[in-house]
Image (cartoon, rainbow, N blue to C red; front, top):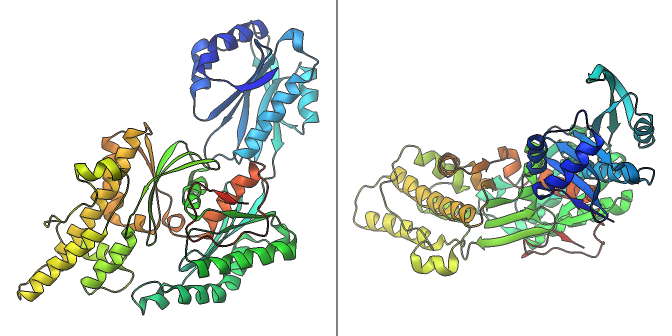
Length: 492
């Protein structure tokens, strides 16, 4: 006897049993096929070796609620606890998906089923008169409340100190402190300055998050912290704080991957990460293209920058144009008054490059081309439009990012693209991404800006997924890993 997730390939077996169990009100084959193929449903069958029982769960993204769609056990297999086992597995799935309640309907004359549901913790909350026809039997509406874990997340990989709190898939608080103004004096992030800023900001940011969530540390069920990739010194501050809190309050601790956290942020936006998805993460320190089949155990790095990250290139070009740090917002603002009339190079897009670096990025050559263009004009005493340079540079970056991301969606047959990272705030990137995804039938997902930049909420969200999945916490022996591979979601 084994439990297997059902699909459309099992339709005939399911319908055979459906008609035997519910001769008067069996589902149609069309309806059942739709249920088995839907992305928001989970159907489980018991085989011995033929199908002897099945049950289905539906969970709409963002609803924080699951519904038992159906459950049936072959008449000669009843009394063996199979219905209870199916229900327990569906409830566990609902918990894993972040649901805060499970709802079901049951015939008022089915005393055995009602007793089972009550024993599992369901309570009657309503009644639908004469719901089941043609017999005219009432339907009892029953509900099982689920308390999801409250997880506190700490982010300190670069220049932003973030503390977020989530419950299941629900955002409770997202406190953030940026040391950007301090780094602007130096034209970029200085690791030692970042670490010192984290030390000064971590406590007030923690207190702000707890106040925002109206919680105390006693209410927290688990702690998550980003242990890489990032600046080693900055990471150590967040890790030290997380370990201290875990020890002081006897809380389990989860060391998680910063980059995968950006993907997990979509959970807080929509209640779930629709998978598989291609994820394009673009920030000052990272430019990565990922194929995410499963958030917790199947993340593949397709490509990344081989030199400057996109955000870093924005900062350096801004400096060439005499703009202050950070360069991204400054170039975006200036580009709005210009036209992309200069054809700057698109790194790693030539046929010879695409063979080996189809999903990799390079912005060093682009940065140099912009610098030479400006220097040439200045040396010749010629007037030039900074706005046109900014617009042309921005267009080149956006073109490369989206061309490779759309290629990945097509190559892997994934019609979903998720954008994350601070550079996603760029107006042209968002506009062009929407246009290209629409043209190619690809669903574009962009979390709100506060969840795109580095933040503690995304780390808490990823930690929450691990807790809900029943994953064991990390030991206290882990450290900072500045080059942590994206395939390693959790450090044990």
